[in-house]
Length: 169
Image 1 (cartoon, one colour):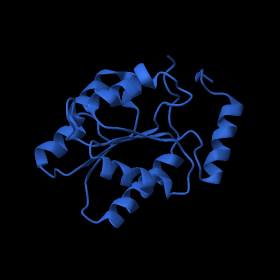
Image 2 (tube, helix red, strand yellow):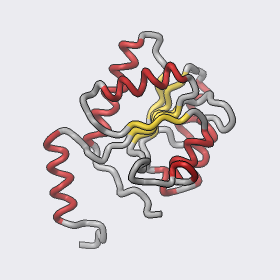
Image 3 (tube, one colour):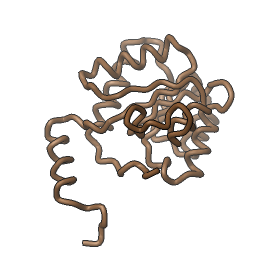
Image 4 (cartoon, one colour):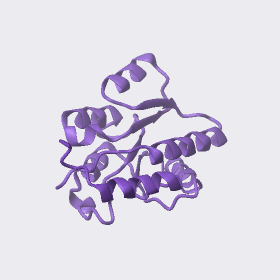
């Protein structure tokens, strides 16, 4: 077998996690500058019944620091490499497009499923987000119940997907 990362133990462990419907390695990063909206997103993730880590950052610079594991995010035990990123586009400083550009230029981070949640439904924003590597683009719904369902469905879906190992670093 040519896959150097294949090991029966790792594969068995992943199969057991999938059978249980829980990915114990699912770490969720939320990038949202509105603290109320961020709190609601975090609550929606927690209501999935998963005890997975959820981290919230407020701007693009923080997203990049978190992804790199630099500065206050250097402890990867506490700030594990994210399995899913919920990304707002309209943030101060480096915006969501800047984060997507940065991720595109750094192969280790391109593999993170990135779901854009934006108040913008402009065709140019949608198209640019996908061109830059977004996995999905969702307009922020006005109905919080709908938002909760979207977040919970996304967590359930990405929690059952097989994802590559995080970068060593």
